[in-house]
Length: 81
Image (cartoon, rainbow, N blue to C red):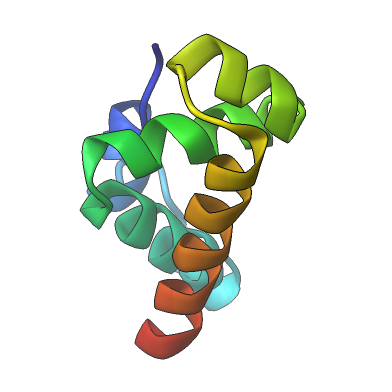
């Protein structure tokens, strides 16, 4: 499963022109990388277009549990903003 490690260049500002336009994206990537591995996997699959039922089936959780994980991710993100 792919995680958020591919954003290292962005976080290191390599090839970045120094404008503030990317600040929200950089903050979002840093937040995503700070999540526990399971939450990263759920978020990555959700971003990739999987439904909650598909994520649950793939990871062995109920659709309801996936919804709870996504709510927790959103809540933590709002608290860290």
